[in-house]
Image (cartoon, rainbow, N blue to C red; front, side, top):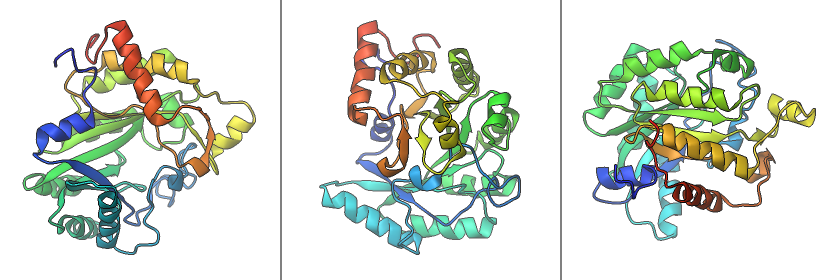
Length: 304
């Protein structure tokens, strides 16, 4: 990586991969989660109220195709000229029989302007049959799978009620590799009980797995969650912008140069966000991160 590039963004990856602009369209395929339907639990993760994380829930559009057409129209309305990735975002998007998954993924890919799929899921919800299906797609289109990890610390995973451990995540990654599927991990910085050393250890552990991408979120308190109750009782702290920028820049330095950084901070729909209520917009925080890296003379991979 040239040191002129502070970090490897998803937009940069897409520009290298495609000869045209590509944007994601978020979809709600009507999935649930094994941590909500009783298979492993009922309450879900302590921070999760899914409508708060999903920019577009698709609740008013019954089919995948209608959601894609709506998403395309919205982007084109603002002058976008390019093609699209169908992003199966809401809840656990491999948590269904393989025949059902194939029907949904096929519906997304039948649109000529959709050049690939991105699938958000849990590491405990990818059977061999699911991976074989995704491998088939990867032979003919662009495929990302996004595994929610959040932390590599098993005590943290238990506390936040994830319902799986780090070994299950590492196993899912290992079983996915070598199939032509791009693999991304989600982590959250600032989870209850974690200090800076825990966060850096998570990054170091997943870096050794040779992932293709990472999504970094800062802890956000969402309405209608157990975490909100804990926050109201002053049991949970959130980052100030300056704290977060310092930590995330350190993490960028730890990440190998070839890992695509899909995001550097979380996104919550404003009506669901309790804290942190930063005055800065997302674009301003990203600009502050770049300024801090430049000030340090730093870049992704400096300490990897």
